[in-house]
Amino acid sequence: MRISFLFASNEKWWAFLSPVIMSVSKTDFSHCAILVEWKGISRVYHSDFPSGKSLEYSEWLKTYKVKHKFSAEINSIEERFEIGRWLNKEVIKNYSVLQLILILIYKASPKYRPTISSWIINGDYRDICSEFMASFMVKFFGVRFEKSDDIIDLNDVFEMAKQIEWSRKSC
Image (cartoon, rainbow, N blue to C red; front, side, top):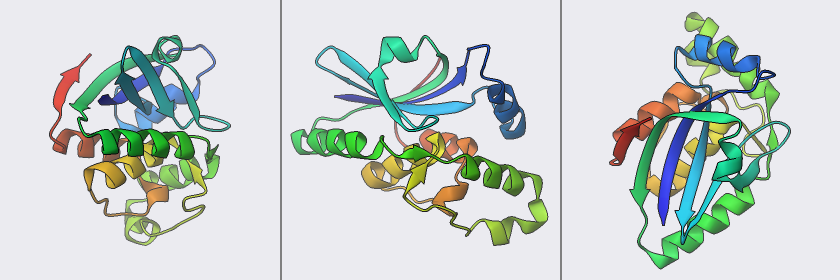
């Protein structure tokens, strides 16, 4: 089984937030997702409005253009099973627009970041794409983030993905 972290931009005309997110984040991507490839099947798991989704990679690519990809092989049968179970359970959470607003406030208010960095507005009940990926990183790669899950943004998961030992591939 191959697991990949995808960092992408939304290419649809209606994705007016995509350029805003890229501008605020200072990135060339506005979304992240987890790709699972196994036995000829390629499936993407991601947090999206109004709730998370799991769909075929080819379908996902009709909306998103991959900018960066980090991949690793998972050889353990037990870990493959656990990853599949976790993704299918966690991907169905509702999306949290409130988290996007909180991250914007966090990024726009450097003076208040130490206070805001510990805020929890919905904990583990709702997700955005970066929190979904961060939770996966914590569970399966043993990483730690220095702020609340509700504040983790695209920059945080991208930097963490670069630190994990992957075979990195820029698209």
